[in-house]
Image 1 (tube, rainbow, N blue to C red):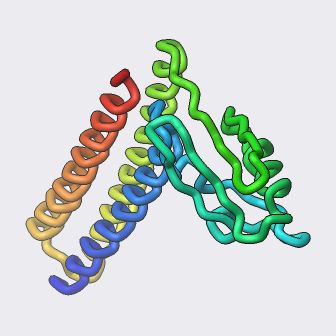
Image 2: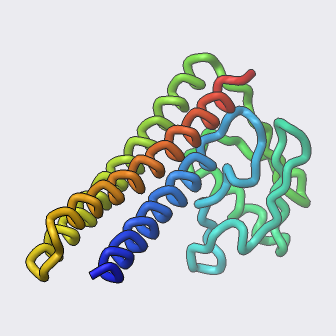
Length: 187
């Protein structure tokens, strides 16, 4: 019985870590006015007829706090890389200097900063919904063990442990969101 409970706790922790990883990835894509190669994650480029992630066809670097450079490994890919960045609807306008693309990151207005904070909060809320669903699934599994002979006291203790695990991941989500919000609102 105890090993079944431990398995449930491990599954809950694993599912919550996936939610946390997804949130971290989503927050990386929300720009905070500073240039970061992570801003271009998810950009797909037409590489000889097949959609390919930008990182597999070019080097992406930061020149300074407001400038990204994208240098394709094959010079003919310059146009396709530019097209991929524009089609990604990131609000970026790459400039071609013949060797690489130079992307100037515009500074954020106060309204745009607020919009980005709202987007970050919505991503955090999705992560919280995921953890609540994980909690519900874990509690359902604990309740199913009652039919297999789990005592009522052990069931209550297991449900409390599930809640503690959920509370700890929720706290991490809040901390991550607070850090991102400060990053976005800092000029």
